[in-house]
Amino acid sequence: MTELLQSPLFALPLNLCAFLLGVAIYRRSGTALLHPIVTASALVAAALWLLNISYRDYQAASGLLYALLGPAVVALAVPLKQNLPIIRRAGWPLAVTLAVGAVLAPVVAVVTALLLGAAEPVLLALAGKSITTPIALALAEKIHAAQSLTAGIVVFTGVVGAVCGPPLLERLNIRDHRVLGFALGINAHAVGTARALEISALCGAFAALAMGLCGALTAVVLPLLLVP
Amino acid sequence: MDSSRLRDIAQWLAGAAILLGCERLGRSVSETFSLPVPGAVLGMLLLLLGLMIYGGVPRGLAKVSEQLLRLLALLFLPAAVGVFYLRDLSLQDWLGLLAATVFGTLLSLTLCALLLARLLKNASTDGGAGSDD
Image (cartoon, rainbow over all chains, first blue to last red):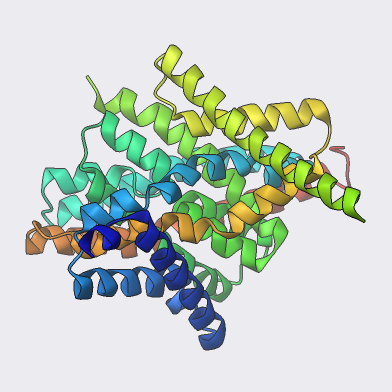
């Protein structure tokens, strides 16, 4: 029985059911706070706790989903290509914002945590908080940050950005989908991009562009700064 | 009827193969030259370059990508569940983390959006009507 519970045969349907349920709840509720990833992860955690399955076993059994993250990152090239003309027209403002945002996001986070007296492992894990999980995990390995902590921070950051970002910017009277998408992509990576794709294709394209470029930029620059 | 179905399936498979191939290629390039950039990101840039040269997006690739990106949240689920298993942190660590992720993220998100909105506005008034293209 435990063998079955620890196998992909159980873990994959569990993930899928939790995800579909999360999407259904999200659609019904209509509030951004119940983003599918929030409810789905809580459901999975509850199921693991009830059935006494360790996170490590569950993680190993969910290998297929991890394996698909790479191709999903590659697939981001498609919305980029489809929206290239619009992106090209807005060229240099995007480049400037990207450079500023890529520096700003980790610096603001690390300084905030430093002021509140967080320990070094936390600070290292925060450095990759705004970039997409596969890139952040690869980066964590390079700068010797804890992978599980990094993954948690990255997803939580994405949820915060995706949930609070759009209403916050609407309050500030920013309704340009290009701006919204780009800000989401830089600061809330794939969760933000998923949210942006729901808002509009244009918004999603800008989010995917920002996420891809910001991830690549951070992944190139940060190891150079932190690894002696 | 049947042959069009078969063609659809072939297009799907070709699309999936392109994605996997680009990821592999990106990964091996990253490993061979021991670049700090993760392989999947290189793969994405390679595919983008390829699509720009090709001048369009093959239908199968567009479909597979759309499905995959729609399921992005599902792909992240196992990593997200890890949030519930963070134990060995002090209260200060938690406070720092919470402030950095909530306050820090919203602050930099707002600043990015304001900066980009301002720059786009300036660019459109400076450049005049469509002089760029």
